[in-house]
Length: 256
Length: 292
Ligand SMILES: Nc1ncnc2c1ncn2[C@@H]1O[C@H](COP(=O)(O)OP(=O)(O)OP(=O)(O)O)[C@@H](O)[C@H]1O
Ligand SMILES: [Mg+2]
Image (cartoon, rainbow over all chains, first blue to last red; front, top):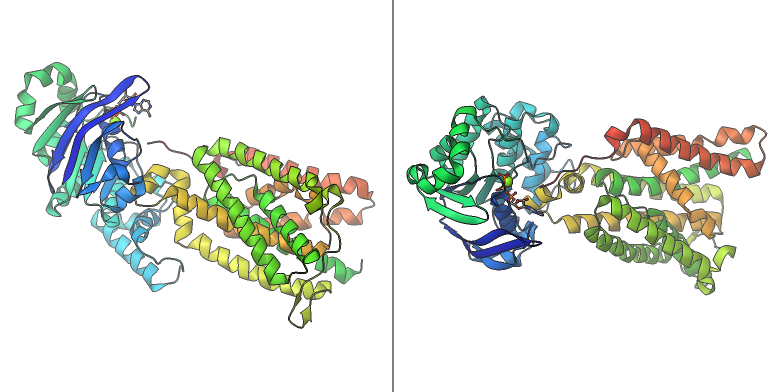
């Protein structure tokens, strides 16, 4: 379970997160929407540990995350898929996944060791599952946007994340690949992983999440089912244009 | 110098620079850690060994070991700098740090004899075997260098290389897969400095005499030329580039050139090579950085 209470973060004089409280049940899929600059990525960064809030609490699986260094939060199950692609482009696709698998293992020192071979074959299985099996030896930087997303999500899966924070997973992804990303995310729910998705495409998010949170200027202004969020007048006011456009054009945002 | 002595001399230099360059390549090439204090770790090794083996009559392994431990502590300071400074400023910070070490070497006269340097460093004796002859010394050094290159081979092709490359490209994504960026960097500095220090110890033993002029920025430029020419991050690249650049100026010896010009010409040659490679290969040398 993830329990965030009264999170406050200011940078300089600007309040970026303003009293955020949020509880997410294990296995729940929650969508987060909100206009550009409303603090969605910042919220993720506070949970990952890349930014430190001035006050508030973040409890995940009975651990006080604010007391843990970022990498220890990851070891505790907090997974992250970045808005601007968090894969290692200079490494091969396979190395990306192997690097994640071997974090928790004491092996991998000798390139010819059995344990390393085992990590490689595990990684290959993860890649085959998302259709990247034949790309294993390519540099990750040569993949398409959609393939990079698939790689990054599989990498978090291979690493053993319990909670997935996905920051605009369909940004920079072709319409065809969007379907593949979606089916991988559906699989996460079968595995009973907790998922938070920041997303601008309302139709996409509605198929994946039973609950949607709307953020605006650092606050959570709505927390409801997708149906109710869609018809909420407050949302229509703040967010109307974006949602309607996205439904027709796909996501127009670049990778900010 | 007889012909055999000359060849021995070149091979010994080659071994020392292999150790020095590969250890720099490890931190810089794989990890993007632009540590300009690498020569300071080399100098630490050389001076510790020189002092311990002359004033205190300590044995080969004792000198190498203590020098390495001191270099490891020194590298923790680098780690502390790295946490606080981003890549470009880290280079400046380590350069300043290196200048501090140089100034200690020159000014802490009671310990280092200042610019006069430390003479009469004895060649090592291990058990019953002495290494007074260059041929013996070379045999010892070839064994040691082969061992060190093997260790680096494991590092370059094992998990630690992946960790280093990961943090160089995207520290946030590295943390997101459970790796501590600061420990990866600290480990890299320790490994890199310890081997640089061992290179320095060998250098002391070989020349029997050291002074601060062997540990200047020019030396750093030379090591950088090697690594950049061999392609940063490439294990084999550094090996061939070391061989190439150590041997490159040698033909100059056989032309009738005054020794006072020869020294500066070498430095110029290396600097020009560094400049040309950096200029023409700039796109591939420095790994791209990403933000969250
Ligand atoms: N490190 C930082 N320093 C200063 N301001 C920041 C920093 N990070 C974020 N901000 C500011 O915080 C606000 C929220 O940014 P954030 O990236 O969280 O928005 P977002 O909801 O993810 O937007 P988008 O949809 O564009 O990704 C923005 O006004 C941004 O300029
Ligand atoms: Mg964002």
